[in-house]
Image 1 (cartoon, rainbow, N blue to C red):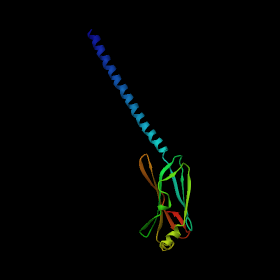
Image 2: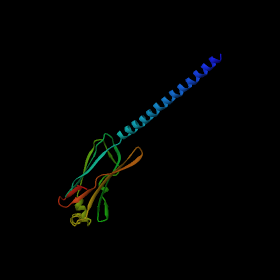
Image 3: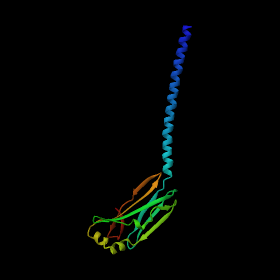
Image 4: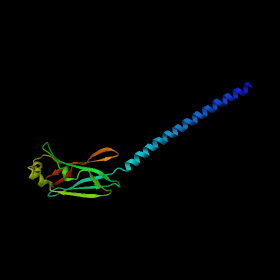
Length: 170
């Protein structure tokens, strides 16, 4: 009888040990699964985010800015920010673009404007400034809301080149 109790106690202890090991194995598997689910959730979320290609194509007399929604997702409140920077001054030309734009997937748009002429009319001859060795920059960025968070991306800066009479990537 004593032997049977000892064997039963040993079997119970061994069974408890196996149960703990099994539960720990399940916990480890669940932890990996939770991590994988989080990675999958983030990847899926990122796949829903729209993407914009924004670039300056021409300089004078017409400055042309092209922008393309390169994704299969929609922008609902896209803002394009355009600034001209020279001699410690910054002029905001964001008014050239609609605020809180709707932009469908794969949508392509072009904005042509006479930037140089407009600046000269306002008393800023950037061709003259640049020919004297001063840097004249066109700064582009864009912003939109995704999953309740405001995102802003700076695009490449462009420098006015006197020789080519155009904007080039700085």
